[in-house]
Image (cartoon, rainbow, N blue to C red):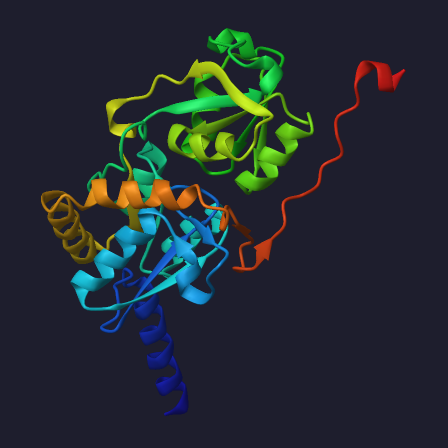
Length: 292
């Protein structure tokens, strides 16, 4: 009898794991990587859940409100956000996602939403001394270009830049920016909206003059949910349509851009376990003179 009960319990546990993630009756859990102003970042003057701000945070709050749920934000690395959705550890992730075929294969994707003017491009930045110097893909041959792991920018570097480009992956944008400042990489691929915030806080950095050509499907943002969570996806899409109809996207974009410019605004990177991390202090790359 005990063996039968144990078998039944095991089957029930496996069945529960196979069910696509759904928001609970009381709580909506959303994973995000708050190192991506103005979409998601941290207001250091606040604490707890209130410290997470930006366009995507406003969107998450609206979705939870429309569902009648309490919002619980789970900060983690960009990679971990996607893993958490796949395993059902969170209901969804809103973290500056764009369409890719890989994401379409592994997740339920929401309808598109737009985060304001200048939010559709994908660019490459560099040190101020190289501003406007590299304007074609071929100009990056033999250079080292950084990109965040599991990002659209990484995919674009891998498919749009020529052979000979050394592509270096970073788990978080803060460490990548520090590597660029120290000369450990020559350039860094970023979403255009994120580059505005990065350049505003780093006088030593500038645009290269190059912008990736992207498909129309990659111009807007979307959020990701567990594959098979069709009822939740349908609910989210209805809420996105309501936000668009009420003109909330423009309002959230203005608020996020304004807040991203205050002194207490900061891009904060998190590890896979949700612990805030300090960007790695990479030693400056050796110059030819120093090497001699």
